[in-house]
Length: 162
Ligand SMILES: [Zn+2]
Image 1 (cartoon, rainbow, N blue to C red):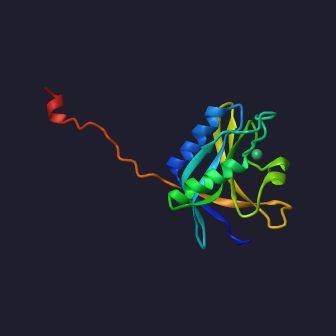
Image 2: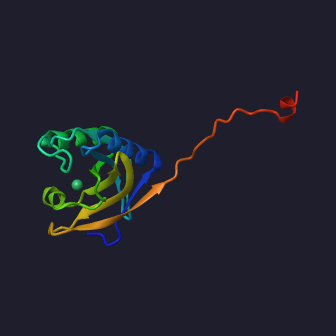
Image 3: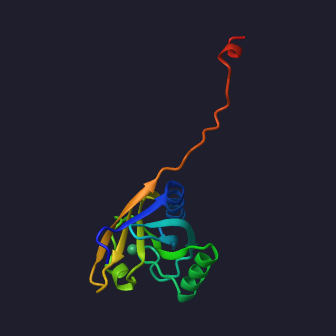
């Protein structure tokens, strides 16, 4: 496993993940992270929101099916990306992986978790399962700022004096 793990995403994708978490609150949301796996870091370039298939305990667990995995792989491939991981939310819990998360995780993938308190999305963290599956290692997240073009109507100060 690489020693310095890093996951990069832009602000727009972070906003979409947070919005999905708020939308499904108090249930966990989940989805796939599509992007590229580079030498020094990974980059999320798109998302595929998925339905939480855990009907028994959707407030603190999420489940995806093998069909979801195949679909996510296909969508990634069609976009020229890779399936690099998964995201899900922790309603009223910190963005730390649970024991359930560890048992159900696969090595290699990035597991991004967003905490959502009282429907307000908060901290985002990402994790990778160790090869021996004994624990999660934290993955540093870098959220790149989006270039925002402000559309402020221009008002001439001279004209305003009329
Ligand atoms: Zn979890």
